[in-house]
Amino acid sequence: MPSILSLLVGVLLGSGGPVTGLAVQPAPDQTEVIISMEGQAEFRDFTMEGPSRLIVDVLGAEHALPGENFLGIDRGGVRSIRTSQYSDQIVRVVIELDAVVGYRVLQGEGGLRVVMENSGGAFPPWATEPAAPQQQLGETVSSGVSPTASAPQEADRITVNFYQASVEDVLFQFAEFSGRSIVPGTGVDAVISAGIRDQPWDQALEEILRAYGYAAVETESGIIRVEDLETLKLRETNEPVYTRAYTVNYSTAAEIEQAVGAFITPERGRIAINPSTNTVIVTDVTRVLESVGDLISELDRETPQVSISAKIMFVNRTDLNEFGVTYDLKDSEGNQLNTLTPGAIDSDGDGVLELPGEQVDVGTDVISLGGSSIAALGNAKSKLPAPSLTLLTSLVVGRHTLINFIEALESMNMTTVEAEPSVTVMDNQTARLGVGEETPIRVVDAQAGAGGQAGGFPTAQVETRETGIILDATPHVTESGKITLQLRAERSAAVLAESDAGFIFQQQYAESRVIVEDGETVVIGGLTVSETTEVRAGIPLLMDVPLIGRLFRVTREEKIQRDLIILVTPTIVRGGQN
Image (tube, rainbow, N blue to C red; front, side):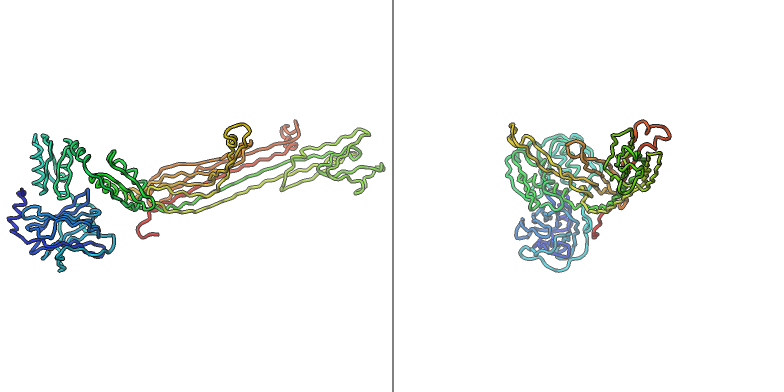
């Protein structure tokens, strides 16, 4: 039975003209669907999701097409077109789309022209028989979504109250308001009380049905059927399953598989992926396939990219102070320890040292067995390896000579290493920047040789571990254009262990999560290590005497400071940027 609105339209428009043809034609970055008819065309239009559809009702018209369903069009974003005589004076044209896009409806003599966005490029035209006329239509634009809009048109808003009304009366009210055909299924007999204030009618109907345990399902002909959830599940139990492949463009099939898995019907549905083509393959009932398609369309979107530029500065400063006094006491007629300097001995007993004939080379000690004699060395083994100042003094007392070496060293060594790596990464993906090396580690398995039995030969394997300066950065672009940045900076190095354990890995790291403006720089500091080493060696007892103890010992003081500063600058890659 036609609605009151449909009858009113029919009276106002009269008999109208027949709809005679359909065509799908390419245009620059657009797809045009032409609805041909005789006379002036009046229309109304709206979109629906699940699956994506654009519905155009031609008012005051009759169905005169060669058929009702035109399947397998598959071009320009149009999958198929279904038509019907929706009421006595309304021809409904349902355009099934790959996704709802911006569109406009142009009205003129000879029919309607639906102009939609198309980013897929050119395609061959399609038309029914007879072909649609090619005359230029006027530029009267409908109240639908503008060509630049990407969101579907919102349904008309409704304000209504129900108090203990039967579900049939509620569905009738929504059918009259929307101009749609809504049919209650068997067992749908609830008594409904609800109040709706200025809400889209489709969302209001969905919430009312959900509150009372019902669900709405749209058939291929455009009729909305309301079913009890249990009945709907039972119906799906006997419904045949179909297989559909979804190509993933921006995400990975493995990521989509995890999200889609919750929609699959238990024991009936199946999901698989083909990594080589990045495709998700789903086998399930039609309702689930449509829901999966909508979900993949929402998840598989082009995300912004972020360029991450890092500046890594590593400063190593070493301060070294060394001071030492070495003593060598020789007896020209007795004992001599010739470790530091050569000696001399009066071999002929004439009381005169004749050089070089009576010289004793370094490394050859002289030991006197004929009388009392003394020789001594102090700090001989602790001489500075590369002193910057050396003073030599000697003191002769009788037949004894005291030789002193006073040595000193002060040095400062500074090393600066800078690296400026950069990388571009997708939103919510981790970029890894590293400056360092792979350290090989030998792992010995003592029980692998003979299956754990005694007498087996141990086996060794070599593993590697990344060391150096490592930066992990995970950016996320917020709706306000800022960047949330998850950072982890690490500095590590492998040093030999004192035992035979192998290596010890020294590690310093910092983790942080910050929000920055596009192009703002984040500074990571605090990765500073200071190491002080002091070594003292000298003549026992004398080296600890206050004030003069320094003259009887060798002192080595070393201070090492390692600073690491990392500057990270994330920048959103806009369209057209490199």
